[in-house]
Length: 222
Image (cartoon, rainbow, N blue to C red; front, top):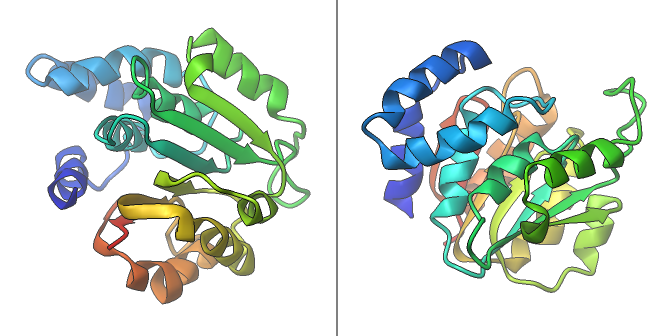
């Protein structure tokens, strides 16, 4: 898993590019890289979904999810309109892996002018043919985590960016992550002090094989 995560980060590079420029690079890599070719087919759909990832992070999520063992559960905290959900679930098609999208699907007063994202999320999932590999779990993430029971192969944290909330998400779900499972966090950057502080002070010290792809930090549970 260590080689997987660092190879993915190194291969994709650390600087995000705009969707159009990223697409051109992906087209070139698809000529020689079968996995890039597989992602390119998913990317044509993913890029139409509104989202907040740096272009290329979707491919990182796809590759990480694809390499999980069959039957693995992927928990995504913070799904918005389904861009990252689609990247993760597209890697699960044809397997028994499954993505659980945990979100209030109603945003908050400080970060979103639009509310009630669930219809848009459902449209993304249905139009991309990944309904069988995804489940929406509406609710406050750490409250969902308090009753969680499934072993988790990959945990992707991108919910509330308040420091205390990030820790509550991590504390609720991390005990369920299997040994060798992936933990990834979005917006680990100076622009988002909450996730950055949580990563540096609490999350990173509990992981091995840590690295980053732009603002997406990751590691594995020992």
